[in-house]
Length: 336
Ligand code: HEC
Ligand code: HEC
Image (tube, rainbow, N blue to C red):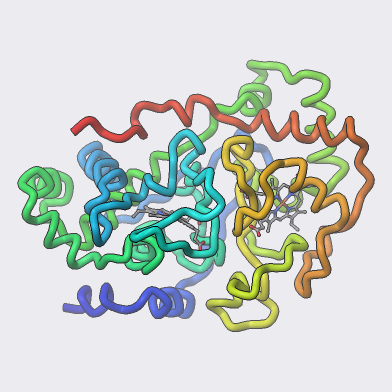
């Protein structure tokens, strides 16, 4: 019974609930991009191939939305490292929210989810797009009823979790699938393992990124993010105040999670609202020291950058593309 009260709670209420009860998890984030930490699995959701396969089928199934038109994959495309190439993704009935769908590469290593960085588990995150009016506009209880009428799902669900389709099974299996999205085979990874070399231009860009421009202070570590939240000199629209939307604290105005830069060449447009179409535009923003946002991080300072250095920095960022990841057959839409 407790479970049902929980799932019928509104999304905002869920977020607030988890903010007040969650304990920030500390992780040792290595500064060496090669060393990935161990994936932490919830005790009640250890991965098995049955669980992952079920989650994969659900991830691609539009029946998770009210009018059976939108699946998770409608906004998270594998060829874009599971981000959306559109600035804002249309949800059910062509409705639009106000944020750009981020990459899901290495999402299983994140300590918290959403731009606000306040949801502590992938399992909980799944309820957000499902219930969001501008996304799937549905309800996990209704989805469970719909899936329970489908013999195939009943069988898969029993095999995976020993239960018929229900909110537990739906959220657990999709999360199990998402935890398999590991991206660690970029050219830069191969270079750090001594298996490939970088061009002179790429190496110069690496030096700018790590040694000259402060980028790695926020975008460092195995996943090119320190997993913190801050403001990088962007002033948000009147509709979105970043984390403040949830915490109501002025110190959280226009503050969001620091995103990974892995596969960045594939995940345009950029920033929470997709305001920049190219990496040049992103770097121009940093070059001028961003805008005068009230909570701008002190690491965001104007710097000089020649046209050549701009090219070098972008060449380096392009080495973070993982072609194996975006072509991995195991992540594709299943055949049946
Ligand atoms: C209509 C487009 C849309 C659909 C459908 C959608 N998402 Fe998303 N997704 C987004 C957007 C936009 C965000 C960022 C929202 C925010 O932070 O406020 C997001 C964020 C996420 C995140 C958090 C990533 C991070 O780095 O914190 C995960 C995980 C995720 N989605 C998984 C899913 C899953 C699983 C489904 C299907 C159940 C799904 N999404 C359906 C657009 C969508
Ligand atoms: C103070 C921390 C900080 C520093 C330093 C920093 N960034 Fe960022 N970066 C962020 C945050 C926060 C965002 C997300 C902002 C948003 O979505 O509104 C971001 C977003 C980005 C994005 C867009 C990512 C996406 O998926 O949309 C790129 C590209 C980027 N940064 C590159 C750089 C480069 C290159 C440097 C060095 C010149 C740099 N950053 C320095 C915090 C930082």
